[in-house]
Image (cartoon, rainbow, N blue to C red; front, side):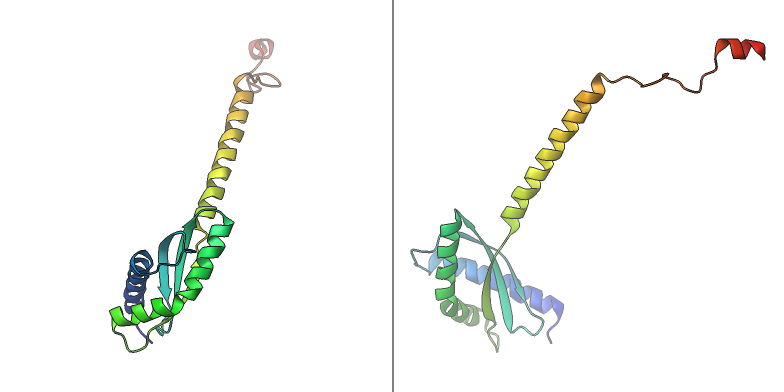
Length: 145
């Protein structure tokens, strides 16, 4: 087992190599506007998971996934050549859900802001249901004492 620091360094290097290879070497027309966001390597350095995002709709995402699958061997060869480690990790490509999650959070924040504005508008003209100070004493009770 490799140390956690070594696995993290290798993951960073794999991310850089794959991103550079996708930009300069892969000429597949199915490959869309792809960004490599992260890479993770198992503690035994045998498997690497590469996370990516694709700008575009669902068909472009599917086409990019197919292009990455077909280029997997060439990318693994490139990772092995540039890292020089004994065993080159196998690559797995996973579509990163970060943009979708960020859009969902933005929608939730917008909904919360609208709800807060509605409550603020209702509270602006609101009055107490009963006496404004329910604990004050009446004048006639205070005079009797």
